[in-house]
Image (cartoon, rainbow, N blue to C red; front, side, top):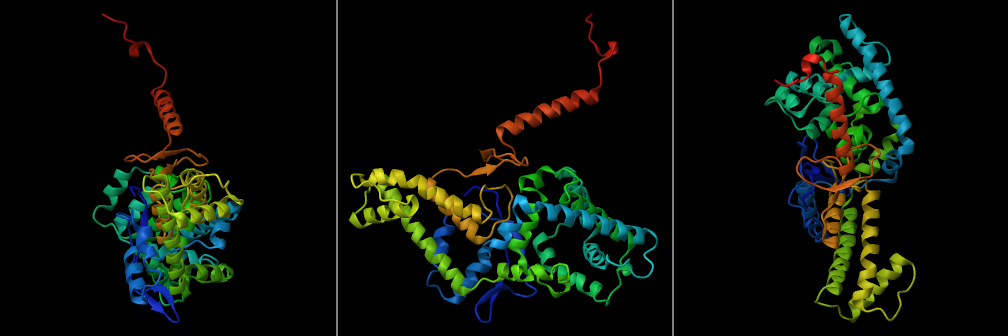
Length: 416
C-alpha cells in the first residue's frame, strides 16, 4: 500500500494474566508503515499462534490499537467544544506560568499551574534546537526552516511522549523544583506549548502538515489511541482526569484472546475476498463457494438474492456491499477517510490492506482543508484536492498582487 501512514512500534511483553503491554523502559519508535500490502493475511495467520509468536509480531508491527466507543465519542464534532475549552485553559495556565518565570521563578509556581509547569519543565529537558524547532513548527513555519533549526538533534516523538510521565514525576511530587530548570529553556518550552494551545483552542490556523492529519484535535485523539499507556503514568493522573482513567485502560488492554479473535475474523474476510475475486474472474466458484456468496448477500443486503442470479451476477452485486461494510469498519476505527501522515494502529492498517485487495484500487486520501470532503489519489507531497488546490492558488495570486500595491507611473512600461 503506497499510503503515507505512520505506525508506533515498541517491544511488548505479556503481563498477567494475558495482557500485552509495552515493556517498561523500552524505546518506542514512530516510523513509516511500509511494505504492508499483505498485513491482513499475515495477521490472519495468528489465529492459532503461540503467545510468543504474537508478542514477536506485535513488537515488529505494533499493537492492534482498536478504538473503543469512548474514543469514537470524544473524537466527534459534537465533542469539539470541550477540546477547544481545554486549549483555552491551557493557554491561561501557560500565561500565569510565564508571568512567574519572567518575574524570576522565585519559590513555587502559582496555585493551579503546578501540573502544567511540570509538563513545561519536562519539555524543557529537550535539546534547545528541538525547542526552537517546535516553536517554529507550531507557529506555522516552513518545514525547511524547522529542519534547519533542529539540525541533527531530532528525537523520536513517540519515545519522548512515552517517557513524559516519568520526566514530569519528580517535578510533581516535589523531588525537584521547576525553578531549577534554566529560565531561557522554560520560556522556549512555554513558547512552543502556547502555540500548541492556541491551535487546540481554535485560535490559530494550523500548518498544512497539521491540517493534513485532521487538525490538532484528531492528532490528540490519535496520540491517546496509539499510546494510551503514556496517560496511565501515576504522575499524570489527577482529579481532573481521574474519571477518564478507566476509558484509557480499556484502550490499553489488549489480550492474547483479542489478538486471536481479530486474526480469525480477518481470516474469514480474506477467504470472502478470494471467493469474490474467483467469482468475478475466469476461475469460477464451486457450489459451496456460491452458497457462501449467497450467505454474505443476505447478511449485507438483508434479503435473499434472486435464485436465477449466476455466481458472477451475485458477486457483482456483493462487491459494493462488501466494500461498504469494510469502509464502515475503517470509519469506526477512525481510519477512513485516510489522512496523509496519520498514525494508525495495526488493526486499522490491516483493514486498509484488505480494502486494497478487495477493490484493487488506489486508496483515496482526504483533502487537508478542514470541512472539505474532497479526496484524491496520492502523489508526492500533495495534500489538497483539485478544487482546494485551485482555490489556494487563486488566493496566493491575490495576496501577491495585494502585497505588491497599486502600480505607479514608474511601474508601467510605456515602451521605447
